[in-house]
Structures are given as C-alpha cells and as structure tokens.
Image (tube, rainbow, N blue to C red; front, top):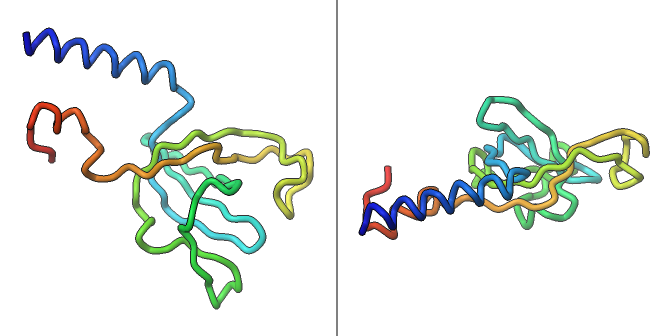
Length: 129
C-alpha cells in the first residue's frame, strides 16, 4: 500500500513539474539597483541571468551608501528561489535600456525554505539532508 501511495505521489509531482515548466529553481547571487531593482540569478546549469524585480522581490534590499542605491540584504545571497522568469520587451518599464530592448523580468518569485526543499520527506517522517 505504501509503495502504491508513494508511486502516486511521485507521478503527480512529475506531472505538476511539466505543467509549470516555466518555473525554475535559481540561486540568488547578487541584487540591487538605483532606479530599478534586479537580481542576479544562477540556474542549475550554471548560467547567470540579470532579471528585473518588477515589484515582485519584496523587502529584500537595503540602502547602499557607496552607490546611493539599493543592495541585496546579505541574508538573501545564496538562497534558492523558484522563479517565473520572462524575456520581454522593456516598453519603458526600466530606466536606461531602450523601449525596444529585450530584458529578463521576474513574474513571480518564492524563496525555498531549507525545510521545504523536500517537503514529501516530512510526510513520510524521513530525515532530510
């Protein structure tokens, strides 16, 4: 019975991964800005992206006296997040790049809590790494 139940959960989790294929896990490597806030993100293959927050990032930044802008708070550097990243025409949203330039924008972002990386382990009372 447990094996059947485990296989059902495994199948459902893989189906949801295909249904939400635009969401990927990234590591936050830097962030900040003066006029527009953005994050440096690294995917699981090691490719880096600079994406603009578009008011999706929350209260993750603090004033930086050196740049007179905002910088990412240290507690968020190195954190993993599930991000819906979109490559779109700027259309006047970001100061600096032209209106026709294509940029990465964060459509949604959610930090992954270290206790939630493998939530199915909690269901089976198994130990997480």
